[in-house]
Image 1 (spheres, rainbow, N blue to C red):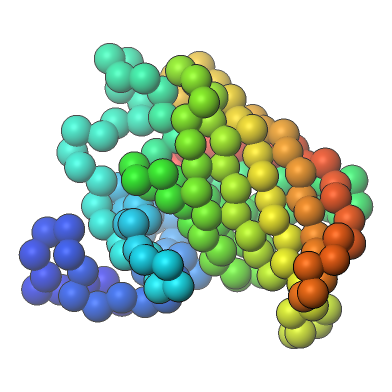
Image 2 (image 1 turned 60 degrees about the horizontal axis):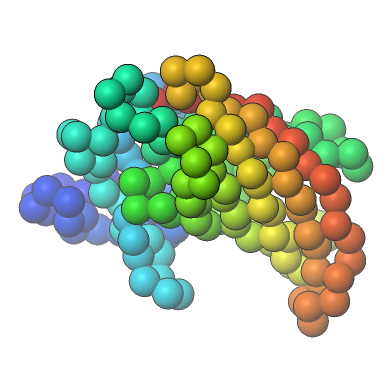
Length: 178
């Protein structure tokens, strides 16, 4: 639900884990353009805040930044490519909307003028049953103008007791939506 009657930057109502990305269409994402993940607190759903007007991920006078909304195609050797949406917030937090509707949260960090890392953990499922966790870690490079990025990384799956199941290489290519 979209907060109403709340002061700027302070949502009145929260949906978990953020304004349900499942309900945000590209048109809605474009309309709100700067809907990004707030800081949240440990164990709580992150707040949704609007990015400050001064934040511009593609402004030539500023360093390149992934802050914004992205369509990403993730590839790994054991399955077909997966389409995901990623929202990078200005506070180094992120939310991913996976092809199966999950919305895991994570973090990102700049590592250079056009490079950054990001990581998040999602459920490993067998049918509707969670049987473990998959931690995804990427090292990314922004393309010219900050409209695309490519990344390489790993997906590490562990069972619910923390035992390593598999580690796979992953790559991704993303295009900025807003």
